Image (cartoon, rainbow, N blue to C red; front, top):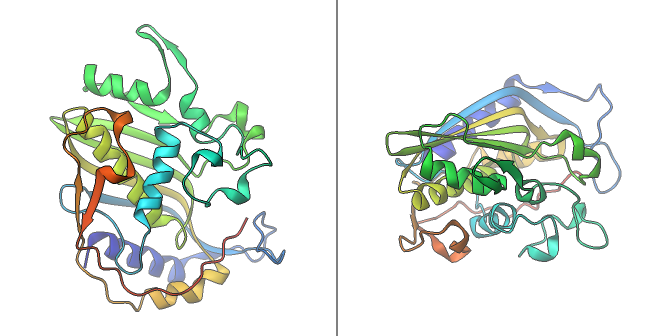
Length: 276
């Protein structure tokens, strides 16, 4: 069993056995039929993934990791907030008639800020510091910009990354205010594991730990039966992840720069409803 599978099983069982329902409260999310989308949750889940040990992708069910990488590149490379720049449809329900999701996600990473070294956006600042100031304790990004929240079609869920170099090892902390465990948990873990690999490779470092901090880890009411079925699945060993070693420029990575060998997820046929 991979560590990603083990942690997912532990997290979901903890939520189902000891979580708190919000059925006595008014909630914002709605199902497609207009019904309120209630959740059972646990506060403050922290998971640690050693990226040298294995790549943290679920085998309990398939994670469409190439599509997850597409979204990662859309946000971190293209720094886009328009779905017309994205090779997928996961953001369609949040976009306006022009395809924009407002001043969210990639938009925030692309805003330039003034530094003594010159004007840089958040991604380029990380790249600069990893190369020139690896001992810095100030290498981070944050897209939860309060002044722009009213112009975001969705507030950021995964909102900050903190990078820390120990020797030649790049570690990172992903902070997430809210996590839909079924639809998005492993999706985000896979994305930010890939991101750590990307930053490490172009900075002459090796990837270390990804620490995932989730404030509100929840399972939606209509997801509970699906989660229960997944908990009965038989996991497989973690696949082998590799990155094209010839890529030395962060902006030259493509979805085809990454590969997984031996990924054999368990069968999964359920359609996952998404609350909006």
